[in-house]
Image (cartoon, rainbow, N blue to C red):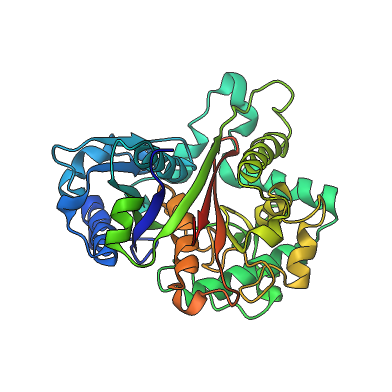
Length: 389
């Protein structure tokens, strides 16, 4: 590639279920200003903007058109990305491509969702074409309940293991000032006492609907070295999308997921010489809408062998102070402003590499991290981050 690409600025809002105090552009502006302050830059230094949002969730058509003032986008190239739940991850990829290609030197990637404006669940349920997607039209809760049941049957995991994941997430969220849900859980019994949404998926097993925004500023190597002493390098990105009606996968709640995530990680690992994930990568921020999905993803991303994801959480391997920390920020299960959620994964991984994650900083020295996004019919995007290139 023409340019190496670095993350030089990171900003996000304090995420909540409702933000009646601001409209959507004002909320986005909070994260934009935080990222500019983090990079010690002016909005005039930004050459292009890339933004991610699921507009059907708020019912606001093409919201990027009202963001020009808050993002300093007047007269500059820009692109809105909408690829389902991977939208923020796809926007990071677009920003990466533009800087890596040499077309721009400094770009801003913005993700946001203000879910108190609309009805996200209704939008997800009604978004599919019944003639070929009726089986998936139960919404996210129904699909992840099927995934949880499938994982129980194939791996031998128990509800107690899912509760351990939820407890781990809450510990991280309570230490993360930006996280939405901070429940102060002290035992897995508190998770197991929460009611079922759809068996075996419990109320505390699933992610919230959050309002918030996250912003990254990406720069070429030449610019990055002038902007910050602690650049975090975007070493590589990968995108694998697949429709749910692809022959041989529709109707299998894990088939599409296995396909996209396996292909994505195998591609990025091969390109970067990663042969032992837990040796060659120090930490992961993965997109887990449920605690059951997190254990599933351990296996799909080769953090462990198939059927052994629950053993990692049982042994404490993925805790903040464990051998291989996963989602020390609290993850998606604590904070989920959907358009911003994948960007938060990259932002949190970058903060860990910089050593700037504060109270939720992993205890091990993080030099390399993996960030993922998940969306639509289990589409996947990945970003590999490094301290040194």
